Image (cartoon, rainbow, N blue to C red; front, side, top):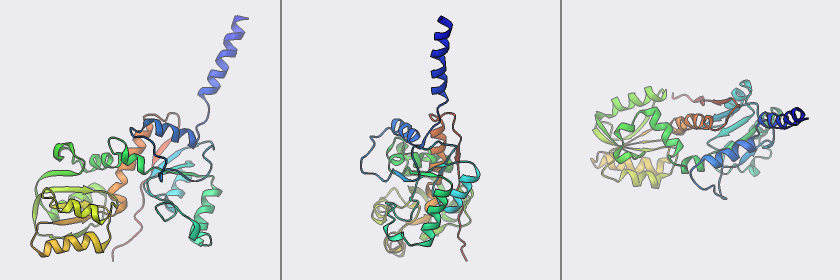
Length: 281
């Protein structure tokens, strides 16, 4: 009788241990492992699919574009965690896309392949350390140059724009980098502004004495570009190197995949690098 009771007790425990993960379960684990309070008003929500579906694999990416979704399907990943919007606007609003053939085909691909998509943007930036900057510092190897352990400000060995740009291209796998401002100067003081925080934040960083060169993602040409070009025309030692949005943050999502592996068990997790589908002629 005692043996039967032990067996009956073990079977439910084994069944529980083998219970399949769902996107909803994974997001609950993410909420428990970030160091910040989860906000009610956030873009970090499910954008497509069924949060209660069974996960076959997790794909982590910067942009969930068509090429990335196709790659995820090839890798047997049906849960996509993306940093940026999937449907072409910050809030993934689709009202104006109801008859759009590009949107409709992408939506059909997601539905046909039973994919679930979750955006992880606000809280990976708000957790400590900021996961995107953490990944970028790892990739760039700049931690030793950080001013007072800041992820934003660095004191580098003296160099020039050309050599510095070559180092960035090599580390990030870029064919080219866009330079705006004084391209002839030597410098030591660098600021990092990933993604697209906006012209006002770029200009706030550039006006500081401890920033000669800002390494940035992307910006409106009538804001940051105009400001730094005027500064250079006035003889000021100011320049910006634009990496593009993807490469200025993508290493942060690679870090995110590694971070997830620390508390998501028995589920394959893959980082998918975005293809840069443009050519500079």
